[in-house]
Length: 141
Ligand SMILES: [Zn+2]
Image (cartoon, rainbow, N blue to C red; front, side, top):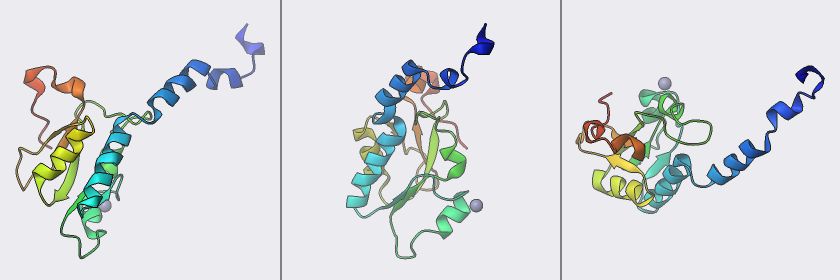
């Protein structure tokens, strides 16, 4: 009967903990963080989970920043508890050289797309989402 069992065992499952450890330094959130680190060296102001929305995120940037990359809370919640992107990916607000940003993301193994041009956000999607060519264009949100 499960009733006599300590509750604690339900939450501290060793195998889940192991999976978490394995994924800890090799998930999408880490890849994005590493890409941001490289972009900072190139003079970009970079932020993950930066304010609640685009307007607030833009307003909070340093006034002198001409190059920046960030994603705000509404996209941060699309990254799961293990730090991985969900179907549909996330969008980055940015200013600077879109190719430079995309290359930095791709160097970390992320799938990034800046084909939307200047007016559009750069999308990062899961590799799994682009194995099907019909899904190669990220959603236009
Ligand atoms: Zn806001």
